[in-house]
Image 1 (cartoon, one colour):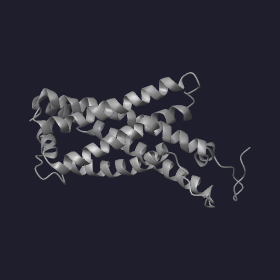
Image 2: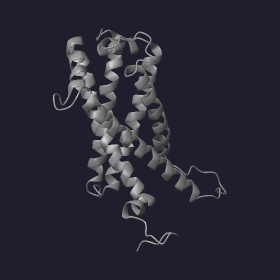
Image 3: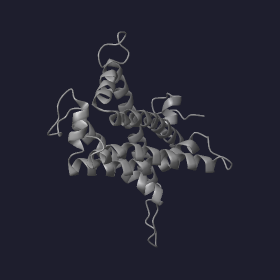
Image 4: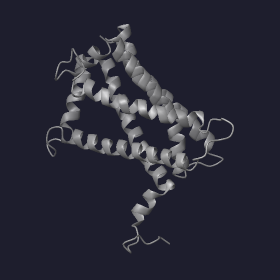
Length: 234
């Protein structure tokens, strides 16, 4: 039974769920799966660059006219952006609050030094920070074109070539994609466990699927800068 607050009102079911660790983990799981679905679609769209400038630029134009004439120019794109922003914020806030709750649960230092967090947990935390910083860079690079010195508004194919023609553009992107692969590898399986999809019989299959998703997404995303660096795409 929910406890009454100081005002005499009982907290709502939504508030009670959010305040619990299970609720925060569920928010992390659902928001993570939403972002994963977007990443798969985004990777497939990126691979259109291998079919030439007309194909890639046509795809970029289609994204801006999606839903036309029912939706105005770029409305569908902005709906996706807002939904993704909400998922990212929910994911990050849940992760931060769970981390703080974990630290508060162990306020006393161990008598003997030992690592409290597993390798996967530490990777998730640092990977999340790296990905958060990368999202900001990626938007400034290929959306607002702020940091892309040779950007050409309205020419996404050429802008991608400009980004991956620099050593720092390639380095930032590849490091971020490595962090993404590790994040998905642990996060997908963890989300499945949180949402009740895992059990002793299915765990091996879920871990294999997590590894496959991580590898495919890493390879798919990294193939673009590698292709530009090697001259396959030019």
